[in-house]
Length: 464
Image (cartoon, rainbow, N blue to C red; front, top):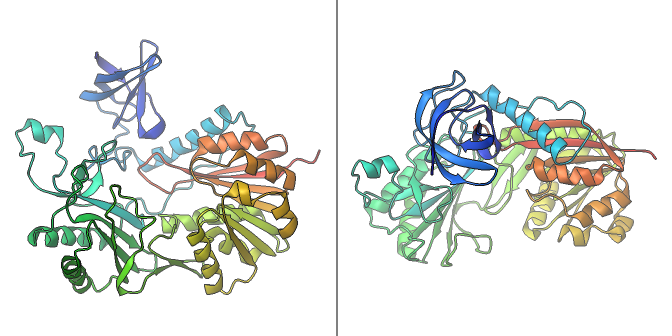
């Protein structure tokens, strides 16, 4: 593969990469910023583009800032630490505009500046860490003669490597005591000879640990073991309970399967209660071990305020909240409209949604579980009333065409589309464009130092 000398990085690109041009070809180079001039070793060459990595910096861009995390460049997260936050926000707005116009071919009003997060570190309320018997060593460590068997890991998977885990010494994503809990768990397990799980050999005891830190200050810890080794489980959990009395909910799971998924495994309560609470604008939300909640609690409030503002509720509307999850948006807007109908695929999430309504004394919501394209049909709308406003917050894959067709027949006055993937959002908006026009676009940054962006779009029905 060729070595390209003196490549100028001109702009940011998708998936946290940056790019330059060489002989009319796009060259993607991770961990660079616009204004860098670099020598690049190409390791992937296609017909229209190449991918490579930096072997030498000739000029370092004046835009650059010093990454704050020692794991930057090895860990797969926070790839934009070397870019000023205002530049991150600017590119996210450009990314939204590009995808809505290029993919959706939409006529847009001005895209609002991306709403920045007040907290750019320690903003996540949930992280999952993985155990491994051998930590990932950087290429520099191996080249320097480091001992490949030098220690176990409790940290994050290396991007693209299901069997390689980077040992995390300090993570800047989640507030205290997240780091202390993780480090103490590792120390105790190593001291007492607990074997860390080897996903290739399918052997070992320690698999994962999930830590949730709510905006209320409450903490949930779930330790996942590969075997029901009750004496060792008890010893570790008793130690964590005594060492960290601030833990509100201490639970464990036993996952003897060949994969790490735990959606079908019950969590066992060890101490405390089986849930924690989040709060938002006086509302309380119960969070269980499998509950979904936006992982940036403070910025989720800003996101939902945008969605509620775009809905422009006056008190007499019927609102459909599709892909309602645990009913966070539904309950957030319920006091501003006549009634809310929520639909979600996961039955456990619907139970959480109902509980959250009851917890907050909200009696004008109703929730239904099932596949959206099967539940939301003309008969359902006839039974529950035509929506005046539809709020959409689908997964990354976007909205099924059948669901869009049903929404078009229901003809709500207004649609508010919240998306974590502007590319699929653009595709869906194009399907609505014949009957609706986009009247507002507001990107919201939920994940600083990453390329991810949430986007909220308001659509108004066109009167033919």
